[in-house]
Image (cartoon, rainbow over all chains, first blue to last red):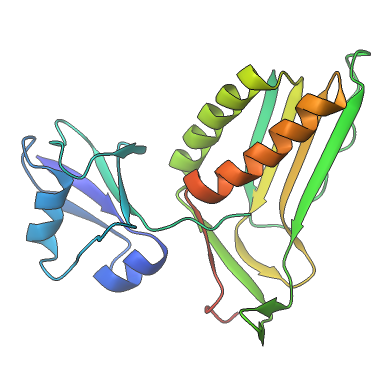
Amino acid sequence: MKIKILTFAQTRAQLGFSEMEFECSSDETPREIFRRLAPQFDPGKTIRVAVNQEYADWDRPVGNAFELALIPPVSGG
Amino acid sequence: MKTHIEFTRAPIVPPPPQSGSREIGAVLEFSGVVRELEDGRKIPGLQYEAYEPMARAQLDKIFAELAAKHPCEEIYFIHRLGFVPVGEASLFIRISAGHRQPALALMAELIDRLKTDVPVWKLSNVLH
């Protein structure tokens, strides 16, 4: 299946794109998907992941998700 | 509770006071304004970006959670995106409630939650 991947703020600079489609399977976790997509990228403890626009677990399979987003520490206001 | 969430690339225009309920005893407004000094150096302004659909969903969730603790009548929320020059507002929140205590408590907690959970970013190192 294809999933849309979005990056914001410093993660966009780190990965070098803001949006792309990526081929993955429903039993892959966000961590595994990013490891294939960008082996040099390490989310560490501060970058969160969102699946279908909700905060999600890095190690839970994405299922039939349509969108995966990297959420670096937020700073609105 | 009535809510309004808006992301705009234009300068924020505070909405006119709403009419309606005669039971509103407290109307609290907060503006977050861009300061000239960021980490000790002068900046022309800040660039803001948002993951807008998720930011809206998070705000809806946070509003509902906070309103259960601090009953209010209305939250009017505007966040500006794109370049915001020094001295202009990046954020406007108006809370209307029967009494001041829930309005003040909700406002304080909402701004805290905005700064931890809502996917909006300011990018100070981006030059206009």
